[in-house]
Amino acid sequence: MKLISESKINTLSDLIVQSEKIIIITHYNPDGDAMGSSLALYHYLIKKGKSPILVTPNDYPEFLHWLPGNEKVVVYKRQNGTVLNAIKEADLIFTLDFNDLDRTEGMEKFLGESKAKKVLIDHHPDPGNFADLIISETFYSSTAELVFHIIESMNDLDLMTPEIAECIYTGIMTDTGSFNYNSSRPYTYYVVSKLIEKGINKDKIYGNIYDNYSVERMRLFGYCLNQKMEVFPEFHTAFISLSQKELRDFKFVPGDTEGFVNYPLSIKGIRFSAFFIEKDKQVKISFRSKGNFATNKFSQKHFNGGGHINASGGSSSLTLDETIIKFKELLSNYKKDLEKND
Ligand code: 5GP
Ligand code: MN
Image (tube, rainbow, N blue to C red; front, side, top):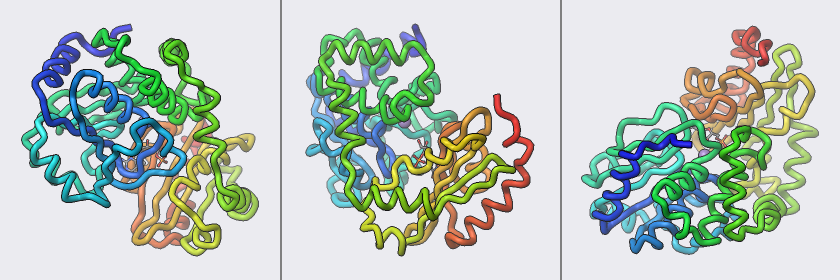
């Protein structure tokens, strides 16, 4: 299996050797793959004798705080002076699990101005052209799986500690919904077999991520399915929405609604699902689909977003109610596309 060219690996290797001040940066609202892939690279670079800094734009859910190296993460929203200085002084910046600098929500200007060499490592379609080296391939289940392949291609699997393996497994598991979607390629299972050889406890990782909810989160989930899910069988579509008041009532903390968007797809005949959550100044939206309905195109066209075919997101500056009306009106334009299902 050779998807990363030898010349890219050689360039990457040279960049790592030549650089002293290295930053790893991932996307806003980091998820399991963002943190898993970034921390895996972080630990790997330490093994290579470097002292990288790992930056996230904002905080991430508590169910990711057990990841090895969590205490070293620098959060831009809380330590922006430290981060901006580091960006100014950096000679190498890795951007992981995103394809557009906008996804750093606030750092894009400084990253754009930085003289550092940039290496993009990602598995989303359409990588931006801001990087000097682009290692971007939608073939991989997750950015974490791609990081594994990079380490393997560098002939460095012997540097892979159980901690690195745990981070990579977390990224693969969360980005595939525990091997539910985007996980039909043999390479993914080759990687998992290697991670198990490295000593990961996959059941413990599953428990750390998915058996870690508060009572309020479970009740919020029940409330969503029972009271807030709207189903449109004629469009093979269902969605869930939550207002700020509802979030307060259920003592919402970031991460509580992670995965909610997937559940409507468990209904027979439903192929397109959306989840709307009211934020301070905008509505954040998640889209999921089964089969060939391209949610990323839908999101890009109507909700300033993007992502993968079957999993994408966007936002709206309308009110929550207006956003939902707009979404419902759009469905009839897509009736034909939603009917096809290969
Ligand atoms: P989620 O629904 O889990 O927040 O995001 C699913 C996927 O959609 C992410 O992996 C990311 O690729 C993409 N995504 C989410 N929100 C946005 C957005 O606002 N803009 C773009 N371009 N992609 C997004
Ligand atoms: Mn990812």
